[in-house]
Length: 303
Image (cartoon, rainbow, N blue to C red; front, side):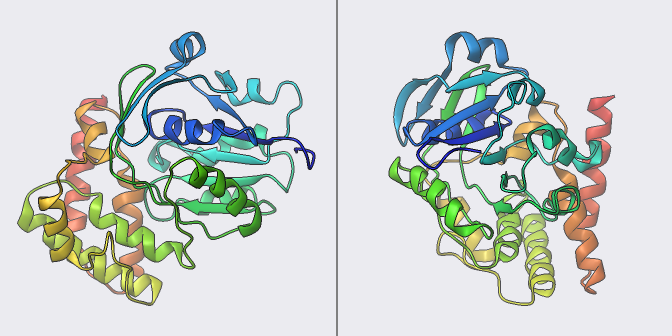
């Protein structure tokens, strides 16, 4: 844990396309020291840093304060981190991802920040780390890693919604704000998560609209209120219109994973919402059908 006049220590787990951009916008501040956990891209990043091609902030080679291959390596010298930021894919269908950060959560003052897609992502972390503040965060960002260490960051503005440990989180987010990242605090992160599901599903307009209607009805039933607008648009039809007329195409992360034949986040984007919808008496047949198809397709290419 950092002394009052020392830089805030941040451990960022999952330094891929999304994680590297947020690490970069923190590390430019002298108030923050970011340690990035890089697995598949470790050698490239350790040697050359990240080459970030950003339509929002310009092109730059970003060399993190520290690059490690594993979380065990990150804590080997006894470091206690102020923040552990999780930017990995949420894949509970492949195992309990909350256990990955256990070596770094040694102090109840360490804040766990989840920058992940989906519904119910907080539950395993809350169960495993009941004494630590957990910040639930939604990122709207257009970023990809076409080759190891090369990050393409588009113009689609990221938005931060956080609901825990507000004072220290606001200090951290202010650093992002000082360096060009747009963020917003939300009093009800779950409503925002359900609203974002309407942007997380791929094409076929009629099917998409039916799925969005189901998400909207389920989200309102689960959260007990109207879902917030997205980019000033509310409801399925306005969201579809906004997507169709957007100047820059944003490829959903699940579609990128499908194209790359990687595990998809269908458990948190589809399965968890389906289960919650059923508990609240909302029928979601289109979501159920697409979930079944996605799991079969994924099983086929992962075998």
